[in-house]
Amino acid sequence: MSTIKELSPLISVVIPTYNREEYIMRACETVLSQTYSNLEIIVVDDNSDQDYLDFLEAIKSYQNIRYIRRNDNGGGSAARNTGVEHAKGEYIAFLDDDDVWLEDKIKLQYESLSNNIKASHCGYLLKSNNKGRIEPFDIISQADLCVNNKLASTSGLLCSKNILINVKFDESLHRSQDWDLYLRIAECTDFSYVRKALYIYDDGDHARMSNKYSSLTIAEYEKRLDMLEKHRSLIGERSYTMHVAGLILPSLLSRKDKINIIAFCSSKIGVLKTFYYLLKFLYKKIRLSK
Image (tube, rainbow, N blue to C red; front, top):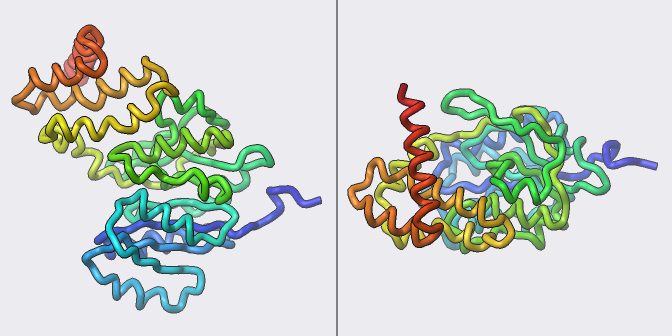
């Protein structure tokens, strides 16, 4: 009898894109160069202003690349959901258009699955400094994910379509859509984890995130807490408090309205916890500056 390791089912690769035609062919090429060959590529254009004509001309000779253009701009979660709906594969993987896969990624992740485990993730390298993040686990459960997002970007996700067609990306969230998805997938299956860096994560925007947060209004901060509020009871008060503080307090260094930000954080996690995490953050900054 054949086992899951001996089969080679079709795997769909969903690549969302928006106004970045210069990246998209490179992303497709990293999929085409995979050692696992039974793949289809679904490029979902989230209603870009660019026309992508050069890309469309370049893929005419590829039967396993499909281009789908959405009629409205719904964001990355909406684009990924569109890809899931059009996928023909038994499993689905995701690749951001500015990230790059290593050639054994899909092969190693597929081999890590079993009859009981229908989702997989892996380590990665940061494009900015080539440093890797690899978790010390072979299996990651929902309990593990309640602490933090141990799985990071969706460019490392491989999951059964039967799960993803029901557990879709939450298009209403403003932040941490990947963590939200993983928590809900973990209600259906644990994740196998390949302890190797199998993709290169473009962290350019994330390196400047603190600068972006320094200009947010309180109302905009409130929106960015929506994922934590959604899963507050699941992840527990300790994790909720730590992540709220970690999102709000670092921007104090570059803000003029420090009192308002401290008051907002206190309204979410309490005065004592706010000052505890503030002191912890400042101590860490001082140590790093020495």
